[in-house]
Length: 360
Ligand code: F6P
Image (cartoon, rainbow, N blue to C red; front, side, top):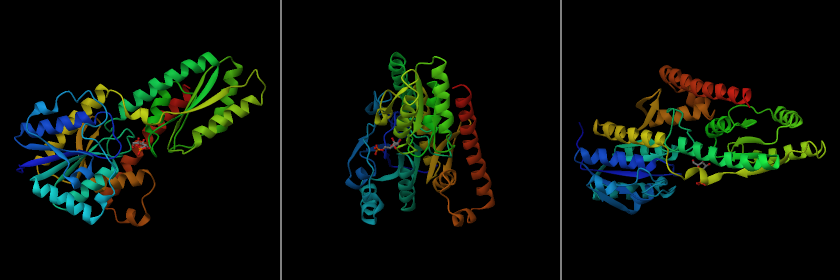
């Protein structure tokens, strides 16, 4: 068991509901093991500036599990990527006896965690992002809440669509990933879902809307991932124009809506609070076992971890951004698990996409 004097916890990148539960869990687990905790404000920027709060008692982290946003605030920090910024961050750790860090966020946060680990500060990443775009884990903190928020907003749009016999094309977040769109589309009874991972049949969607309008259907919802930039707005115009051309009887007036950052707020769901609590405690366990440069994952219901470089590589493989050179340099063992993982994640998406189409 490695000995720690103090550890730091930070959140970085986009906030995600449930981050506070992760902060609370990691801080309390560390304090329970006799270690003091610095809550570092504004992500890596706070580490550079020495902007921190010391916690020595679990009661100092009261009443945050139910709050959204991040209690420690967040930032995307370019200075940290520069050698001078990193040197200042390391100096903050040395001056304040911080000899381990828990960094909660997405892939940018994990890159920072690797840099800190390489500079001798053991750092562990926890996946906190609504996008669920960390391929090596089944779920990220914030994903469930964001989906529920989007679903509720879409239910509200459905109400007014039904009254006015309209269609609404709704863009949901997810950066380059369609995980939110896919699940929210199914859960809100969308007529169609468009995501970056699977080709979308626009013509079939328009024909389906026309047919159903002829059969008396009043309201239509189409969910589009922001990973298809600008497409939701364009599709709304197309559906509107194509159906208008059929005459007033079959015109499906179509509006566009972008849910945007509303998806990042709201009370974290039980699922996110639980995942965050499990991951927060696991991060401390692994840190105290002497591990570093890893990201906590949950696969098939079991908490584990992946080396951050491997996690970033499997992300690139999934997004088809891995270069040939990078692929050739992988060991056979790495190729095997990474390909299996990508196949599994894409397979799950295809299965859900088929369901979305079948029951829409
Ligand atoms: O990564 C979370 C996320 O909300 C994405 O879904 C979205 O693309 C992005 O962050 C928005 O970033 P910002 O908060 O900087 O506008």
